[in-house]
Image 1 (cartoon, helix red, strand yellow):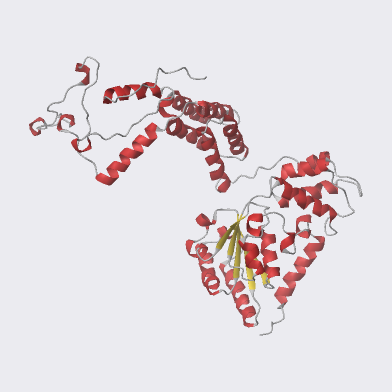
Image 2 (cartoon, one colour):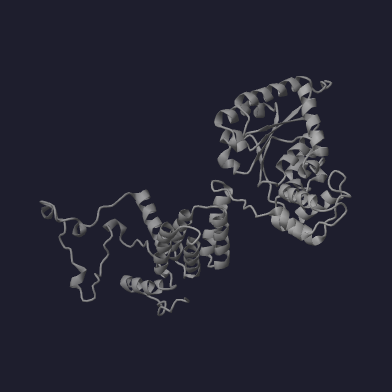
Length: 453
């Protein structure tokens, strides 16, 4: 079937894009036109990448492009549309209504009747509500549109499971420094960009790359701003870049992936005894506007979860830092948080108490709660002693060493072990003591050594 000529709305949208490609901001002018123009993302666009293979076979499935701002999601979606000879239609979830979605799908039906396919690109698709996402389901399932959704948030959490199950997910990492540098060099040499306008020495290019933090759009915007302050035919200087950049904006979303990824890296750095990494991630969170009380709570948890009784003082230091945050507040509380972070990071590590309570909870979940032995049951209530409660109970203080040579677990659990401390830090003393109490044979952990701080 012959294709129907593009409708007026298609022609108008195409005219607007063409105009932006000539007169718009530098990132719009430098948008890639072909797959080979796209910088970076070799995992999905390389010879073995599924996106390249799908485009070359003209079998592009509906796909979610998941990546940080400036990683090229919109550019890649437009390349897909051009490579498949489909009409590209774009909606932004920040302002598109359910009526807009239905209207776009109706236009796709009209095009399909004339033999023309539609790539429907939805920017920030995670912002669509359930009704809007559900409206897309039949169109995706029937192949009415090739849906390309772009999101900076984890789509497995933010996109309806029914919709995401019908789509592929392509993860776009931030551009590497080499990728950003290549993008800047192209912009300076390309007629669509700044060819003949300015030159870009290595020092200025490196300054832009350092500030872009893997964001291609930010890099091109900064280049254009620095070029605007540079005379025709002159070289952009690193000083011009610094002046054009102003204060650095921190890419940190307190409710999104940056929040979860950074706090995860922070906790794991303390657990791995790397104070430098822990302080760096602490700085990222503070600069990004993270709630300092949230940070303090995570340090307190780490003090018990990862340090435990290997150094009980860690919990005291962490709790004191939490109180200091409430009493002092930022910016001074950053010092209290840093002190606690370094202490927890350098403390000897033990998760024996954490593993112990989880093991006990798992046992209760599997086998139910067993009654304590009669000797341990409450004998203070009326007639309790007639039931045998407390009979045979021996107070440990009556023993010369204050310890009973018996297990107090329910009879059915005799021999169970939930607490098994390692021989590290102050918990080495507990390790030796518990082995002696249990009558375990074998070498002791040795005397407790002084802590390194």
